[in-house]
Image 1 (cartoon, rainbow, N blue to C red):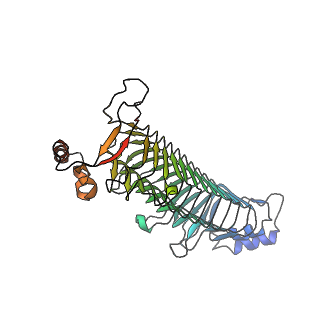
Image 2 (image 1 turned 45 degrees about the horizontal axis):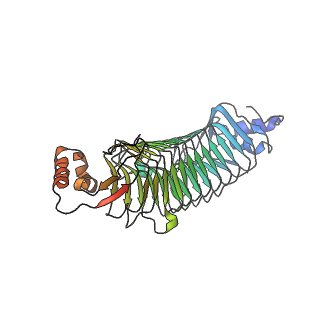
Image 3 (image 1 turned 120 degrees about the vertical axis):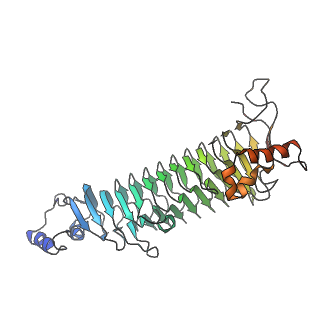
Length: 406
């Protein structure tokens, strides 16, 4: 065994460690964790060790990509309770299956922990940070146990934790990544796929979500009563569940959504009407391409600021629950691929406004079975007939006075 730097253990302790192991097959890693002095590094010999392991003092545990800790289906595999601890290059597998106890691969209950370059699989929850601040979780590979989507645990779960950095992790086949009452965290550069909700924020204001790739999830980023979110430079793609949204925001003030790529999703953005003036969303320079619906607004009135976005190849650019849901949004300088106007003066903006009206082509949105017929000649005929000879004057749902041409 590689012992802590600059320290040697007595031979009697080594002999005791060997003969108190589980039939000599799984060495007692907890003993060596306990014997490692604070501030030193423990590099165990390659092999499979039994969990659970609890770290109660600040050490560096480095598995050198040759160490597995197996929880054997019971409880949380590794618990960290000492600020300043670093854990890297381990394989953690086989947590318990209790949602009530939040059985996880790693539980962090302290501050300023570094968790990096680990593989965490066949666990219920991946990494659970509970009332821990200033921790860094980066370059880990995380997946849940094999189960139905709703029966898996969160890949990463933050609970009453702030100012943590979740960066460059590969997270796949989990239920969600969830922040609850966890403000001012940074979620940067992660790859999240094949899960229910890529990232859900509940009462978690001031969170930065940047440069992530979310693919094949049922929903992308969901913010609920989480103010001052900054969602930028993300790529969200291939989310085809009927009512799933790449980004959904409810009751969140002063949220800024900019420079994201949203591709091949059922709904690009879902947002409620702002109940107060400060509840507006700011959508700047995003690209919505080849979605069923680019933007979906519900409620009685608009008010969101939507400037400089690009809408390309979407089946429907904007959908609403009522004629006024998007009417009072501040639309300006967006590029609409289906704009039919001209730019005679060559200033880069259309000479006439881009206007959208409420027609019957939303049938496929309201009826799940009808989605199969989206874009079919039958629905196109219904829509054409209403546009040609409407029974009543159609409602204008929004207007961009200066659409961008290029």
